[in-house]
Amino acid sequence: MSEILEANTIQQVVICPPPNVPSNIWKDAHTFTSNVASDPISEFDQIYGKQIEEQKDEVKEMLMAAANDPVEKVKLINSLCRLGVSYHFQAEIEVQLNHIFESQRNFGDDNYYDLYTVSLLFRVLRQHGYKMSCGNFNKFKNSDGKFNEILMTDVKGILSLYEATHLRLHEEDILEEALAFSKAQLIKSLAENSCPHLAKQISNTLEYPLHKSTPRLEALKFVSFYEQEEFRNETLLLFAKLDFNRVQLLHQQELSHLSSWWKDLDMPSKLPYTRDRITEAYLWTVMMYFEPCYSRARLMLCKITMMLSVVDDTYDSYGTLEDLQLFTDAIQR
Image (cartoon, rainbow, N blue to C red; front, side, top):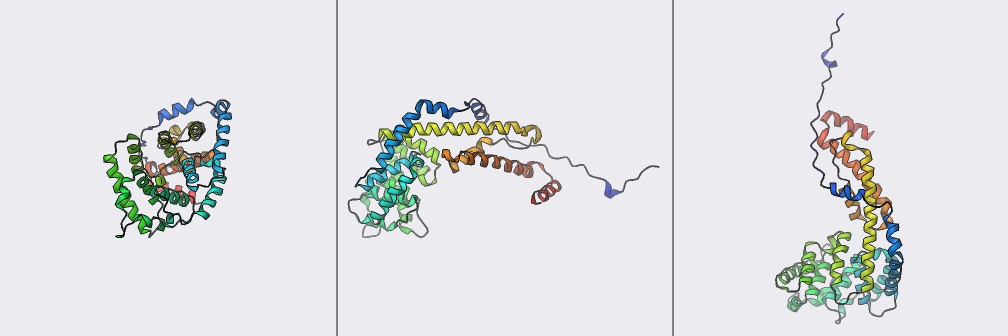
């Protein structure tokens, strides 16, 4: 007897669209990370470990030394932060800033402090969570309520003011005015300045203000800026360079591990529509927190990000509406 199939029992065969996977721009990175030594940190420490520890102790002594000048202390803390080594001295920095904050709350009233100094103190303290009053900048205004024209010649001070304005809060009108004033003056100075070192620093600050920049990229750039400073601290400079290289080796080692993990999953053969973006996912984690103590967190977050990327690609590039409804129900269960 022939069997007749009813219409509602016939299953429609759905052909999924072919994968449209963008090319991987990180092939060179995968090749590089595959050649990273199994334990580059140990090899680095064998050569530079003792030197780094000695320099670290020297910098710590400089930071904790009893000094009467809070400005010099804040300058050092600012350099530590911008060079990317402040994570070594978090407890010491907190002690020093607490003391400075208690003794310098109204530093804007001090006529000895110029625009650069007031802006630096304001930015560093507010950056670390201290409630600084924007009223400290009132002394730089004239009787018309505008910033004094004499400030226009103080390029270093204007640069410091511009950085400080990016930590402004809602309704801090004076900092809004300071932002417009300092930005206009920096653009003008950039066109007129004949010092290549200062011009490069101004250009970088206008494009990437410190408060909106990536710590690792900022550290890399600031090392070159600090190297050109007339009153740079050679011990701090060398310590920052060695520490940057050491942390970079750790990041390369982590990326090597993640690349191997992703390769072992063999996604191109199992799910060919997925994007190979392990390097981008890892870079995102480094931008969040680069410090060595967060190594395990970076690895975990990167793997989670890649799994989310696979799910995202399934929705965007592969699944049909019916398939995705079933997939969504499965996830929600």
